[in-house]
Image (tube, rainbow, N blue to C red; front, side, top):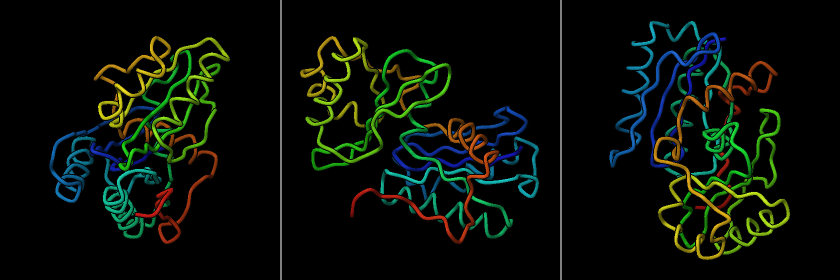
Length: 226
């Protein structure tokens, strides 16, 4: 299976080409340029460097939300446009599951945090059992205090630490650490942000299971109003 993967839900812009269980090419940036400036040139680069023609891909995997309203709209418009032009289906990937997948195989709970402003984060709680991701808390938009309280309950219940990652960590790290103290740790810089590679791997599994939508039907999930 060949996939083009797109990630533009947060500060990171990322694109990847996946073929035969391998990430053939990937381009990721985390700078102050808008996704409207970077995403299409990045896609052009990874497709060129991969040596795989866009007509050869089977589907387009992209994060469906939550996340930045502007970033999600740009990603959705790009995926829909390519899907319509190439007559390829879209594989929607939950943003927070893709972010949690950065720590695939890690013991304990994994909590991605995306800054949703107004004292809230987009978040969920995940764990891996026998290599498979399990959802403990479905994605939601909640206050940092409420999230920290839920994480504390989970840590005390199972006696395991939680690993936090995402662009919400530098914003709320002190507040979360004050509540959880030694019960939490933070992912290193090498794996604490979004990557299209994770979107591609998850997309391959969902596409193989037939969980795709048409370009016309695909729409972002914002979780809350702008």
